[in-house]
Amino acid sequence: MKHRIYFSVCGEGYGHSSREMAIARMLSDSGAGVLMGSYGYVLLRLKENFDTVEVEREFEMVGNGGAFDLKATILQSKKTALLFSKIISDEKKAIEDFNATCVVADGRSAAVISALKLGIPCVIISNQTSIEPFFRDSSFVLKLIGKPVDLTLKTLTALAENTLIPDFPPPNTVCINTLSNNRHIMKKQIFVGPVVSDNFRDPGKSVEIDGPFVLTLLGGHSYRLPIFNGILKIADRTGEQRGANEGIGGMRDTGL
Image 1 (cartoon, rainbow, N blue to C red):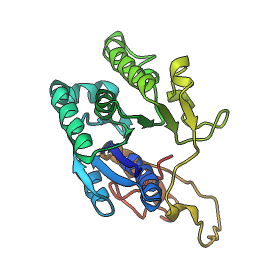
Image 2: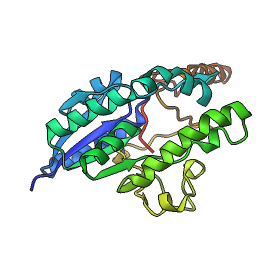
Image 3: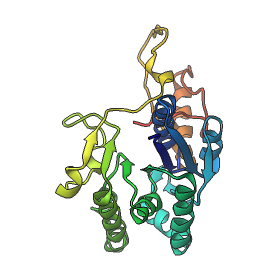
């Protein structure tokens, strides 16, 4: 039986699609059928190498001063929340039309629910199984807003077959603070290590560096522009500007 794998990919930033592309390429090379669902600039990226289908955005990440803002993100996404039943229905149809045998959900809850409705195995790929760290020390209002969202995330994670964590196993897990300690979720977590494409596996030439340097890793979210601009200003003070080769939107995320 030929496996047909449907990937539902969050279109916020480039990290989700980077790791899904690496996995999908290996599956495709082994003979599996692959269909990628996403939206926006990530959908355009996926179209270059895979069969794709457009799905609706579930949420839009919002930041303040370069930092992620949970409250603003939830409030910004309230319109799509009202249309969530349609989002699930459309994604369910895409899965049925493709005749998928397995669903891979990366940052997409609609895909998890659709797979459950269809009785198809669903695997989640995520560095985050809890959003509690984003509101644990916040105001009462933010806790009131965040707890139902966190409960929904944990419930869907517990219902999936497995959750693949593209990170190092404990005690070296980078994303340990955003992983749930709920035992029903923990028993389904599988630490698979960083998921990167072949382009990142070959280190290439070694580079000679004369003096001290600072390596800064940023995702592709537009709200991180203030951080990027701040890095450029600091680089100017050194009299040299060596690492600012790519702007926001062109920065690469390995999917760690």
